[in-house]
Image (cartoon, rainbow, N blue to C red):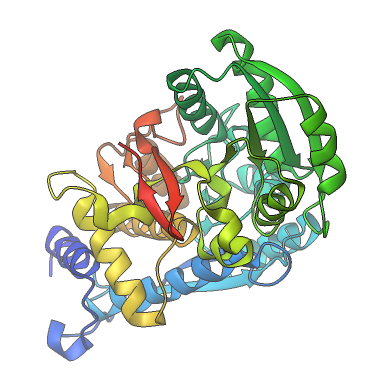
Length: 386
């Protein structure tokens, strides 16, 4: 089987989301394994991100190997749980590099944990494809560090466009005090004034805080026309509930960090009307078939639902893009870290769940603002705003 034909088969199995036995695909991969690492927050307060990422990596490993592997080599993914902490992430990265001799690493799930391992992996010359959002992960560019999620800068740009369309000129923000929240807040401070939008108050909360009513009471006193929340569940869901309790009736606009089922389940009825920028995955069934991402979105979403009995979400999609990207480039580079890095940087037109990726030496995220759509929660479901 040639490299090109092998990769064509892999793409077909992933896009169609049909898990078939290795016998159905012909002879199983016989070469030595291509080993990559994965670091996800499988436990801890970011498990709503890490669990679907872990599930996706395991699913892809089985699908790729059932399709004959990568150029005849089985894919092996060694998965580590960083429990959402920077120290554990760095320890996990060291184990994967020094013990397992991995060719590359996907993850971590969070901005803070990604930043914690960025310098180490860059010095070790091990490619990292992060599953976290903040622009600081790839700016300034580190040669061996990439990421698949849309950045907080793009999310703020999308929110600004929405605010201007709604003629909203006074907003307040409430963001978690993690690296992700602080990165979003920095982008709000940088971009709102340029758009003629005043940030009347900025409050913070801890990811484990049980209530944010104190901060929200202060915000209400500043009389904003909307509140922007930057964080990942459960915090933003608690904020949505607190706003209902306090009778704060202005729109709640969240970051892309809430685009998963945990936000809907924790917020319940309080999620109704919440608006956010998101990748197309959570509204894949509302995306026209003519869209370049449609086939990938439907394939992944269908496969995840069939495998795990629950809907795919944005965060699993980030892992899908990272693992699939590495599989694609390794089909041509072989087990060489330097060649893998160079091939990612040259990748153009890679269709993922997060958008159409066009990497370059100056852009290690490879996405534009078009990777986002605006979504609103209506009747407990994600609804594409047009």
